[in-house]
Image 1 (cartoon, rainbow, N blue to C red):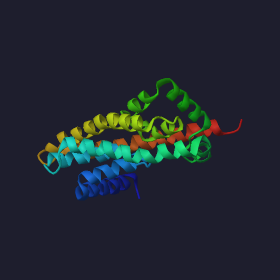
Image 2: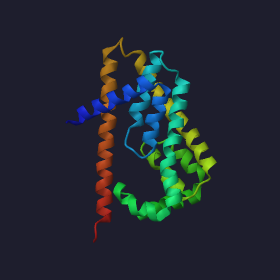
Image 3: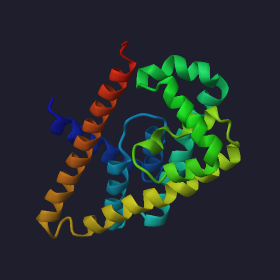
Amino acid sequence: MSLTSHLSAVAAWIVGVIAAGGYWGVMLLMAIESACIPLPSEIIMPFAGYLVSQGRLELFWVATAGALGCNLGSIVGYELARFGGRPLVERYGRYVLLSAHDLDRAETFFARFGGLAVLICRLLPVVRTFIAVPAGLARMNLVRFHAYTFIGSWPFCYALAYAGMRLGAAWDSDPRVKALFHRLDLAIVLLGVIFVIWFAVHKLRKARPR
């Protein structure tokens, strides 16, 4: 199956979950994304925004459901790192190319910036998915962790849903918008694949014995 076919299948499944579950579907999908599972929020939230443009959902509650999903999904990485500690992360982190050096840097970053690290990273693509792990290792206060996760995730979810809503308003009236929307989704996935490949090659080269 080609990359385009995979993208179409994932996008169709995302649309189906949101169409069937509404706000609960948005929350579920964003929880999966925040549990370190590669389900792109850059597809989830814009499609939720499209349903806002159709009058089926409301923008404020879509963003809120997405942010709450981020909180729920983050529990997995946070609690595993918090209770399993560094040995557990070092043992299984290699399967996601997370090295001891990366852990050292993450812990140093948290020691310096504390909760602000969670707040900032939740506004950024890719890294936002894994920020719960170093937060758990640093044993960040649970209430502050979830507060910063929600505060940082809400504008991220809102911005993506808003973009989807604006594009969705012209979806049926202008075929060029529909074509552009599909191209943007494909570009996001392609960039994600390129980043993952670069990241893997970079990590494997560092890990290779000299």
